[in-house]
Image 1: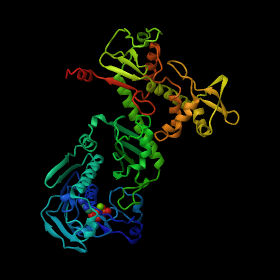
Image 2: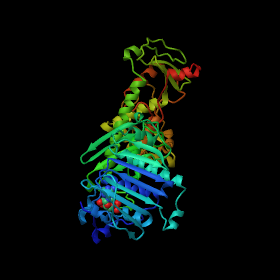
Image 3: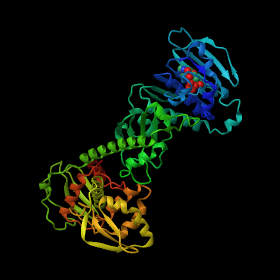
Image 4: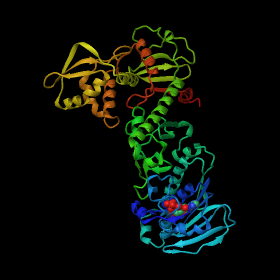
Length: 552
Ligand code: ADP
Ligand code: MG
């Protein structure tokens, strides 16, 4: 499509703002143009943090000789068809401001050549001046060189950081973009030094490794779709998390956005996998129909309006959840394989404080050996030492059973004799707020006088197999606040209910109870973590043991 000036009506609708704030903004505008031009290789060379010079060369479609000078005019673009075009933008650029804004504040040279032309056409521009086009040697595609950024607006330079810091922004941004365009090759050079080179081979692994510092093989693949929304990506394994959300990267239709748009989906998907206060990381590539996203709400387009934000959130959360559960199941399989119950049920019901239990070993069978410190279950599969946190494991088991009750809307089991109790005023509020969630899981609590309540039914299936504590309602109410920030309100109630109805650290367990607990844990969809995200199982590999004995 030809480059032409936007009509005044469209210009009026454009979210105006300062496009070029720093060297990284120059790189962003130029690289986005190269991507819009269908480039397969993009080479970025930077000097002096980008203040001295930025050069971006691509092998994209190029600009026709007669239009190279036009491209530098403000509001000149080839990317919007007509005045209605702003409602369905599928390119990264669309305002026709990028090149004009760069040339306004830096000495800019653009050279471009389209297929069929013998030679490239170059134009130089700076400030108000746009030079005459002249023929120049050059390959197919476009090369833009930008020198002396803010030479004519020294005040703007004051706000910049040292060249090293400005370069870091460029490098991080470009490496992040590369995550969303694995078919495009990206190279980056600073002061003559190669910083990275990603081949245009569609393999995201080197890019994931570069951006996140973890091998791609340890990250989980996410894929999901629902009508008109698709998501794919790579996310961190549970337990491998960060102190902040900065490494939660989101692209919608190829556009890098502030991830806060979908932070609810991250929290929702990981809520029982991650430690509270820590954050998972990864990159999500969401695609929706162009008409469903409005990128024209922010000058740098880092924010968009999603028409069906809630649905997108749900699709992304479910896709992440599926990946997490599959990974948890695979990890458990690797950590532990269970013998058939007949093999394990041989233990007596005598307490086994620190006695070793002699059961036939195969490398695949998990054998419970002992309870340690009335807190941990010591076991082995013949290859490694396996330690289970009895409370965390039991919490996970009961939590999932409660969740099953909730999903099936299973009614509680009525108590023959309702249990009556009184609460303090502060507990009363917590109880009133959580009664609906409790009832959904089968624990039915009714008001019974001014500050008195009675429990008339308890959750089904949660009272047998393994030790179940008498549910301590007072502790439950006092504990509710602790889970507040990490879990949404209903999950906090269920997690707390699970926590306060199971074996604690310090409770003696007999052999059969330990075996039953591990069997039930094996049936969980997310057996490796308790509802608060702490690990339930730790495996001590022979390597680690050998190190303890200074064998290696
Ligand atoms: P926008 O990207 O919003 O259209 P720009 O000022 O960044 O505005 O670019 C103006 C026009 O110049 C583009 O619409 C495109 O036609 C052309 N252009 C700019 N950079 C390139 C490039 N690297 N390859 C091909 N065409 C380009
Ligand atoms: Mg542009």
